[in-house]
Image (cartoon, rainbow, N blue to C red; front, side, top):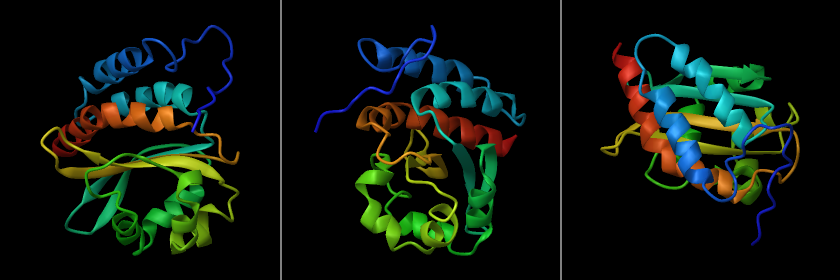
Length: 185
């Protein structure tokens, strides 16, 4: 499998190519270092995520064990279908069915399309809204606790490169720890 780097626009540095992992990790570390009860860090997180995957919608939520739901922390773009999905009783269970609540790699939509087609949330909310690809990951703290979920979705089919999933995997504990700290604040 060969990844094709997404098109680059302007002078914005890419996270793909030589040194990309270090640049991405450093930027996420800088942003998440100040995570607290405020949402300023969450707003700032949109910038590197959008450079990584030019998304049409991003949604990040912290997992609330008492309600068995993901509560929104970051919403940007066309998020109404995601709001509807995560307001449903089925969302947390479907994330577990997809294996995204366990330790593992982020999943690319175009690589798990058959699994997505079997999920009520995808069929009722996301596919009808026009989403065709994306990446999703269960957020975990550095000590391995599942604390949330992050997804970046696009209307374009099969455009999210495996490199984006790899870079998100590298920063997962940074974002997970920040979500955990912000939940306590």
